[in-house]
Length: 196
Image (cartoon, rainbow, N blue to C red; front, side):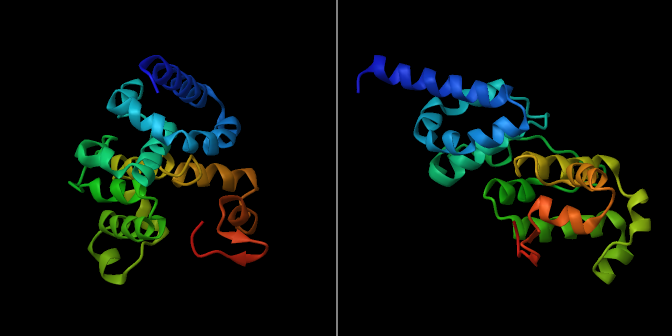
């Protein structure tokens, strides 16, 4: 393939990515397979591709692109900054790099366990000792840390998970959990799933 042909492929891929970014949630979901099939060209665009995203933002298209690259082109992550590309913040000095890395790798079960341990830490020594958080303890947790966790889950789950997303879904089904579980993939055909 000559340079002109490669440029055409790169431009077509870049146009597809821009369409992906500019689309609404439903259209983005419909583009996932097509975006994933372009992993070679996404890789060739390189780190410069991420200049169009805000590392303080919550746009899950950047998270998906990172996940595609992690899956098909792990050598892209030799530049370690892409393992933790999104900036994270904590009021209590929790380092969220490990959570972000696990989410980039799409290891959702492990990420869920790690998130649970962070929530217990945010709730305090009693929650850590007992192994779970009481609802009444949530109000005393750092809002900045809860926002960080929520943002990472939203970014790396194509906008399906995270506290804010699930709260919206729960509200849309009139706070009926039995209707929410299938919408987020925790129940399928009446049976609990291990991890969506």
